[in-house]
Length: 120
Length: 107
Image (cartoon, rainbow over all chains, first blue to last red; front, top):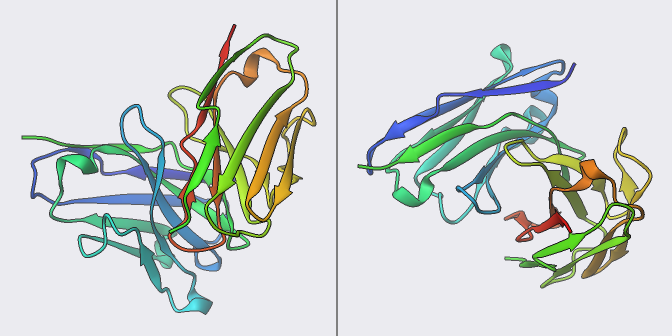
């Protein structure tokens, strides 16, 4: 079964850091682009960023709102994706989902999400 | 950035109704438009990809159409399990963007 499981969420103070992990099973991570998407409480979905696959040099892209603060990395040997979040702001409070990108276009599946709360 | 505008933002409907949700892109996106369903407290789930292709396992009462800038998601006969929020998403250009969502509620 293809599955994604996120971990690492929690409560952090403004200006702090947090690292999220996403462990994949049922497929080989290195073949796929992988994205992070977040959802603030009661709000819609917001794309956070992308990690391209090995043939595409593991290049990354980020939403303007997180560029320079967030970094996506991966460890294909562990079939895991990461999101390093620095200089966190209250507006970063959200459930963070990792998702596999198919054919460079659509997201399937999604993990169950992990909640990040930024508050003093 | 390509803005995605969904309408309506919410609707009330009865089981058995036909429901149409529209999504408009601020720029041309070809057919690179996907639809997701999200039930309360759950992760989003892919319904349709490339505007009109039904994801495996999704009931045939769901259909999608459109290209360019205007798209629709149609639920032909609303079922109890279809009460959820629906999001469109463009994959034509980075940053990828989502519509604001359409919440389908029970009348």
